[in-house]
Length: 236
Length: 236
Image (cartoon, rainbow over all chains, first blue to last red):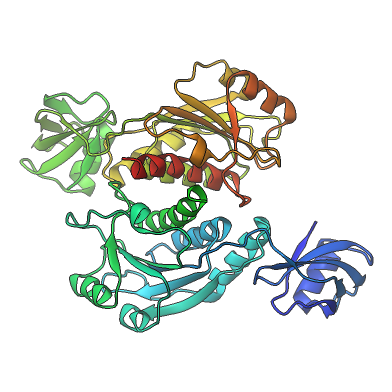
């Protein structure tokens, strides 16, 4: 069953974009009457069927929205310094979307080796991962900001900075309270600068360790996402 | 500080291979007297120094072995059906090595789309990840076997099969007992065949779920590895 992503989906008749129409008719070879599924990326699926199989402006008929199976009682926001190698960030976006994440922010830090992040490409990867893993939620992907700009946001729930330092003994796994919203900061290959750590502490972030393995940036980010899910899973 | 991997390392003078000698002298431009670190991939580091800077047969002087920081009170063995896309398996090997794993087996299953796995290349990736993440342990990587052959092994500790089925309600996270050795089976994109599941159950494997996200094969494998670490971490 093919899944279409339509952010503005609503019950009734909706038109596919020219690109999606072409894909549906020319690539998937769907015919009028064929059943499909639509997600709005905001937690809802719609059973639907193709009503007009036009290769430039196909029409779908959507039934009423149904909540997706991936509802969760917490909101997870991860902010990460982009790795030098773009593939590693794309990989993280795919895996985080599969496991489940609400918001991803890219932060430009003192030791960042990558200055530019293609947020549009990251969103495409997230859309593809959402469809592949049958999720009804698409993470918000924010364009890169400097760390100082990022810290000016308001953060709901718990806020952690994963920081590699011998004095940081608290673990994310034992500091996070299940059911809480959560924001986690992950630094670049050379870690956060001392002043950045101080700024994060001043903004209310609590330093945590991910354990005694030295992890690459994208691995640390992915492990953080999975830790929050697992703590919620086992405390149910 | 550069890390060399020498499986047969022992206190005293050891010779680097021609390839490693060339790398040390021509690429890293090490000189006699320069300090280096050696791991034997079996849990030990050796402080060492270059004593003969020969580009074909360099010699190192190794001090006595020191246990690595990545000792763990459990042994983790993961058996996975290789994905169609080889990159996704290489990625898994890298991430599992970073997080920590003792043995990886590739299994040829009824629904496997990839018939061949280059175990030598996988080992190179594991060696590189071990060095990068400053680990002292290299996972054993077994060449691909059929699932039936694999099940003839003896398995120590707990044995799980991650299987996507509505009747499987037990979670890996709550079924695994911290401190126990553990073997986990992860199926291919099309999951295990019914007869394969039955054979695994007959061999003492217990069916578990990884949660309600539909995960790609390599993501399921990586999430399983991290789950075992996290359960051990929080129950310490």
